[in-house]
Length: 108
Length: 117
Image (cartoon, rainbow over all chains, first blue to last red; front, side, top):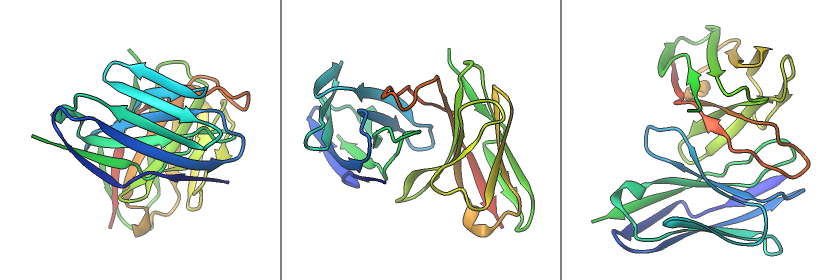
C-alpha cells in the first residue's frame, strides 16, 4: 500500500522562500513527482526526482531522499502567481499516487 | 502542444441516471487515467488503462466503469449516479512507463464538475 503526508496549508509572502515537505510510504519506490494546480485548473507537472538529491528548474527545486522516504519542493522568490495547490506523487506499482496536496497562499 | 480534452466542464444529473464522461487525448499516449478530486481528499484514482480494451481498477472503482475502444478515447461511466458521486472528475494521459521504474508525466484535462441531484 501507499500513504503520503504533506502539510495541508502553507502561507508565505512575496519574495520569500517556502519549502513543502512530503513523506511517503510506498512499496516499490521509483522516484517522486510534483504537480501544481491553480484553483479551477488542472494539475500540471513541475518536476520529477528519479534519484536522491536536488533537481533545480528555475525558481523551483525538488529534493529526494529515498532512504528517508522524504522529499520536498522548494519555491524561491515567491510570486503571487505561485498561489496554488502542490501535490507530491510517488509512482505506485502501476500509476501515480496523489496525496491531498498542500495549498500555498502567497501574500503581498 | 499536448492536449487532453473532456466532453463537458459542468454537468448536472439526477440520481439514478446513467452518466458518460468522455476524455480524448491527441498525444498517442498508451496510458489513460480517471481521477476524482474532492476537498481535503486530493486526487483519487478510479480506473486506468494501459492499452485499448484494457482496464484496471484504481483505488475507488465502486460505482464506476470505463471503456477504451480506441487508443485516444477513455470513457468513465456512472451506471446509476448517486449524490456521493458529485465531484470534480479529471482525466489524464501519459506515455508508456511502468514497473521498470520510470514515471511519465501525466497530462490532465480541464476536468468535469459533476453535480448529482
